[in-house]
Image 1 (tube, rainbow, N blue to C red):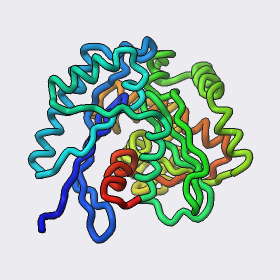
Image 2: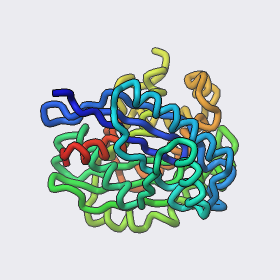
Image 3: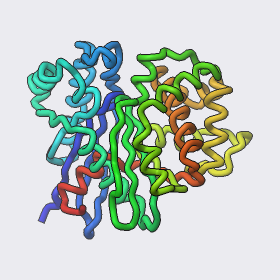
Length: 308
């Protein structure tokens, strides 16, 4: 009997993500994972509109993925759209444009559904969870927090304070000066009272960072030369992250060198993401970081295969 192979598309604010996987011995086996830049936020996120240029980039990404899905003899099960699309005043126009030009019907999900799928993906990779931990997925349009312990989700919330919104709101120069960092942190702070409130009841020491920015942090450390001060170049830990954050803020030329060939906008986004992570670590008293590449699309695949 031929093994069923499925594909999931996750259309985020900065990137369109593809996952292809199978169910093997009662576990999710990911066979293909890819990111494609779409920058849906560019030029319109704070006006809650997706520009025609961004629509075309999304179409290019999805048509590219359709070819890959066909090459892998997989079935496209679902194509989710998240923050930028769910908040767009021209959402219906965008969905229609995508369907007419790719044949793919997007399913727009709310923040709670997004957070649940992220949790399902993370728990396929990070086991066992024996004490309360805080899961964080940093996106372009929204950031999702999930507080969980051995019994499952305690609390979850999506905050519309994604990194592309920082770029479109502040247009901070790189390297970012201290005055701008204070402004950006004050922007974050005004939204995060629900997070601090739940953490006062369930304090955590471990932050589980998934996909996106945390993959980029790990990639940066893997690209570092032996002369750098990172203890580990294969996993993300708190000391490594602290050193990386310092480099991102103070030595952007070195970061650019490590990110050769990367989209310049993405080079900036990783700096803004690091400001956010550093802010959360300091405010929440985080002592340990765990990083996984599994997130929304893996959670969706696990759900389709009945693994959650």
